[in-house]
Length: 431
Image (cartoon, rainbow, N blue to C red; front, side, top):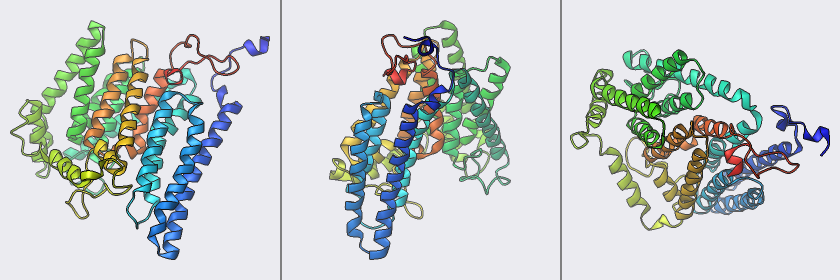
């Protein structure tokens, strides 16, 4: 090996490699083809007023995408491969079985958002962010989220002032409009502060306090439950007594605040029942809450509507308003039911395989950060059990980016290398 070849590449040098340029060109073409298929189907429908040809056009386009994607899978690791296959199967089978009529562009756009959040943005982050800059990047993002958490508290204290920018008056939404989204991203950023500590304890403590405040102000029961389970998983995985004690203190503090302070946060008459249900749940009194069964009822109605179509699903767009209620209807508020109803059993299995692969990535982190990484996986897996729209929002990419960048902070993996002898560093690459 020559002296030039033996020199380590400078941070960020992968951006200049031919392999990265080829990767970027490939996925640019992939997304362009996605939106081209959607636009062709939509234009054809509007010109001819013939809805019967929409599904074959979508099927042909997505089949081409799957064929191209399958050629790329061999060159990627199992995490990104499993995520790609899940999105491709959901789009393919859902597009084939979709009901005739309607605009196909929003459906394709939704699948594009899902892919960008779970695959595209994390992969670009691993490739583009130098290893020594990763803590600073995540720290800056968490600081911005913490500021949004503080804003959420003001929105609860003064609901009339922020009524025009919050989806539900009396709840905190920060800058994310939907309070449920606010709760999830605040919980995610809290765990990421532990995953990428700044080295300044006071700064980390202030950010964590604002993030917990934002989580509580959102009054998102799904996010609160997901966060509590994530802390419990960290307790089980942590092997250091000091870490376990710290997590136990945080868990007890959150439960006590939810139990005794939540009724005060719900001073708005619109959210008094929600705040009371959270306080009762924190005290273990689930049966006495009049609103704890709401999601269960929605799930039962959605599963009944799916009926015998669970093998191949009802098609893209069929689950958006499948539950009667509101002006147009409700989604099932459960991403697992959403996937099953949209495209059936195959994408459901691929979704579980993708989450399992994500858990493997978390467990391959170093011992210090493994408990927090495992907590992030549990946070996502439980949160999407209560919300079917979370995975298609771009802000969920923060969780995947954080996991990808921390998994990439290890030493080179023994016996693993890329072409040209470049060592593999990341758990996602080694998976």
